[in-house]
Image (cartoon, rainbow, N blue to C red; front, side):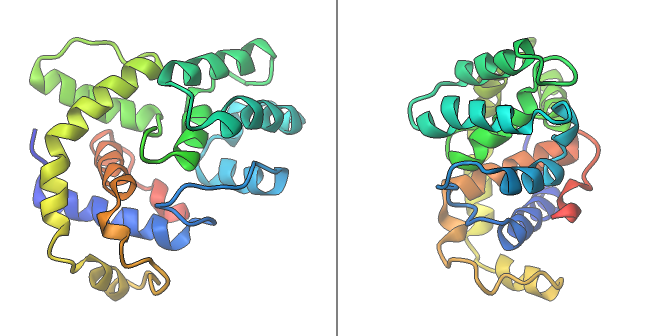
Amino acid sequence: MPIHLCDLSKAIVEALWLCARTPYSFPDAKKEELNENWFTGFANRWNVARTIKPNTKHKVIEILNSKIVKNINEISPSDIDDVALLLHQEKLSTTGKPLSLVSKIAFTYNPEKFPPLDSRAKSGLKKRQRKKGERGSINTYANFFTTWNSHYLNEKTNICETLSDNRWIEITKEMGINCNELNPTTLEKSSFHRKIFDNVLLNEGGDNSWWKEF
């Protein structure tokens, strides 16, 4: 399912917007452990604050630092499922397993490996599955991870070729997004390419207004 140039261009500009506005050096990984002040802003920006119960933030941060952040280079996709289950079992989440929260933390600390999961990305991915006649479930993060990467690899060359003309930062500046401090190698990073595909899925999944909040 090749991405239309117009849709891909929109996803690229959205990714550049994230680079310009994120409170750490995306597309590079965040290095410092979570603290309450940073986590509060993150949870609001990424629309996951509602997934944890009031007054449980300290315990949630403790678990995320222990299980995800400190082991970010060793954990597997199934570990994302396990940590989300743990947060639920500890009665820290509001509804079920907070997979979106945990996956977005993993993405923040290792954006070259872990795609962020939420309902919009899942919806976009399911639409692609249906068009290709695929039937695999993506109800766990491990399954989402495998399916996401399979579809990303089909689009990777298209994304890289579209970025190769190097006009995107200038276009973003013309739109009023300050990208003056962007690293010149931003467009070459695989984490940036992967976020572009995530944006494509978000847009294909319906609501595409999330990035304006950054």
